[in-house]
Length: 233
Length: 233
Image 1 (cartoon, chains in turn yellow, brown):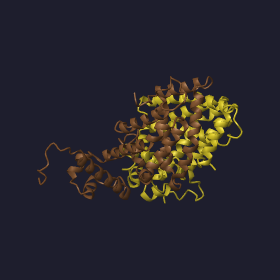
Image 2: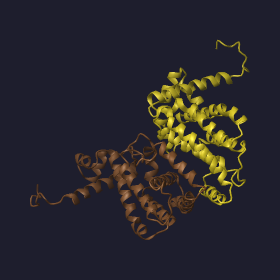
Image 3: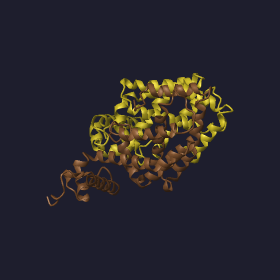
């Protein structure tokens, strides 16, 4: 009411974005301090200094807050790897860089991820990386792997071109699973896993285009198709 | 007191085993009916017609009941595959038979597994297949895979002989993960996954002993060793 001098058409997005970000920050902090299960929307609103109604306006539920967290991680990750993907032609280096960047971006949330993991691991949960609700973050993650692969100089069997990015994303999910369990200092073990598995994957990719190996790879990918694995179609 | 005619040396194991089995049955039924989280030891004892103290005598906690469930599944599985493992020489057929038998033995618990999964997926939970508490069931599972492999006519790189059974068990865990999410009628999709992935694994095993492929396999296995994967050592 004291800001009547502002015309009604002033873009409110920046302010809205700020409030949204504040609520998300607060939620993540409270999740880390008190645990995901024990943190209520009411407590988040109170700590963020907004009304409960306002909090619900930006995030329909606690699950939506976690989706907001996923989306933010994807955005940070994408930003972090943009220079690499624009300049590095080698597949192995691209994959390694993208995975190491993911570890760096996620490091502050390692503890939260460990305690939060059991919610995301529940197949029935909207927070599972395989749920419908997670599809924006998942599609973005698969898209990043598509760029890793197709922006590289690696030879790719044309029959597998469509599906390999999703299998690379699955590799990423396996690394995430390992990372969640990783108790080594600054997740050093996961760092090593990435550093040493990415060249192996690059060599498997090379092999997959050879005469001996191609039928095996195609059969493997076809199996993934037949069990309905590929979520992007 | 009314059974004083029984000498003190009468083996009480059968009776004890019966009570133990009854408590385990009852627990599994209540877990399925009311959910794992909502079922208390008190309710289990009441339904089984034993005292709460008696229930705790056999199972220290709800977690121990689940370990009891794991142990039973392993025993049933081992029993089911004994004839096959004694007679079939081919690796692919042995692996396929063992995996299909697991699906059959586990079928009645599919629904329970789906709702129970988030507890087992928590890395901090004693119910995780990777926990210290689960090591008897895990070791038995790895032992079964050792017998699948080493009892077959397949050529195995001697350097990998020790570790491959645990990687096969990891494949089994991946199948279990898929099975938990599988909503198809009688888990038919998982059945197909097993039927078609076991020959692929057999061919990978063959390849792993060839000149081109051996360095890659060894490097992969060495990586698993270096991240401390192998739990059996």
